[in-house]
Image (tube, rainbow, N blue to C red; front, side):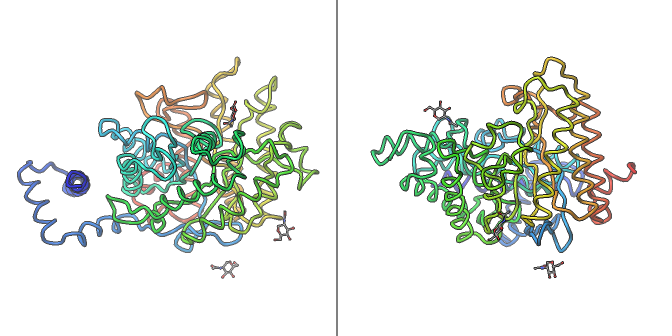
Length: 452
Ligand SMILES: *[C@@H]1O[C@H](CO)[C@@H](O)[C@H](O)[C@H]1NC(C)=O
Ligand SMILES: *[C@@H]1O[C@H](CO)[C@@H](O)[C@H](O)[C@H]1NC(C)=O
Ligand SMILES: *[C@@H]1O[C@H](CO)[C@@H](O)[C@H](O)[C@H]1NC(C)=O
């Protein structure tokens, strides 16, 4: 208990310390620093400390009206990225600097949203050790991620569980239910329909949403640093291709989240495949298999408590034997189709929450990645100019030097590829310019002043 309190204080001290350093442009001698902090703490206590988190860039909740996001009354279009590993890297003090460096680097590229995992079920450094049992050490790591994002002016799209096995996922929930003797089935799709497992997941969601951040003192559900919640990464329920099972799960879980937290936007985390509710659109799917995964983009995304649609872009995984140009044309068709769905039928924003080009293709060149990114970003830019529903896109995935083991076919250290680094900043500036954000934001003013 006492130990917890101390580390909690020392983090707060660290944050104040850094603020003082940047404000004055010099380092205080350690003694001066310590007594200064002690003075601050004794004089103003929590009031002063929490004031540190409400100053700086103005932070309000991102809202939605019709097909657009709004921030402080202005339409918001997003250039962002994925770094799923932020919590995992914040558990140990020794790897935390990588988290801070990544968020800072994102801000330096003018990026505004980072998507990351707010789950780790079972396994190494799990947040949820077993149903309803949490590791406080790991929760503090997530506290750190959120506090640090706020410091850097970055908002987080937090995903709550994985459909896939990394970091536990639905398979872990099913195993837990099985071990406790309450599971109905050993199929990992029972995650969606087994009442005991639904209870496990709801309990998890409740604990996360009502968590009081030990660094900022703000409950997660009240923290505007969180851009939105994502129910589940890439849900599929192949045992029920009608789509009814997943639909029912999303309806129940989205209503549950909204009953706890009305501040934040909510998305599902879909890959975007069309299902039985829109047979004509099936021709836009990569191939026939994609219509039979138990996910149904139009039907699932139409649920009232789902504030915006989510879509992924992985032409390498969806096609074999297509050339790069054909893949690029497909991506354009895929995006336009979903933007049109959202403009005309769903009447909500759509975010392309993962996009990537594999470096394992036999004819891979880095310039292709640049071209594909440019195609995707241009479509968002055109949508933004027309005040359309194409609200943003997030690269999969960025990391920093010295963590190659967290990469995959799609990962990169952005500044190691100068053309992509430059392209990313240009897109941030183009979006900021049409949103009229450059003048009011010192970081963007500096970043974008040289770029037309
Ligand atoms: C949403 O947009 C409509 C049309 O532009 C406007 O009339 C309405 O006041 C807006 N609602 C909110 C809550 O801002
Ligand atoms: C579901 O479980 C099977 C084994 O029972 C496994 O092979 C498969 O990868 C799992 N799928 C997911 C998405 O976890
Ligand atoms: C969405 O739901 C409404 C009713 O809530 C329905 O009228 C509409 O047709 C649905 N749209 C799609 C695309 O499913």
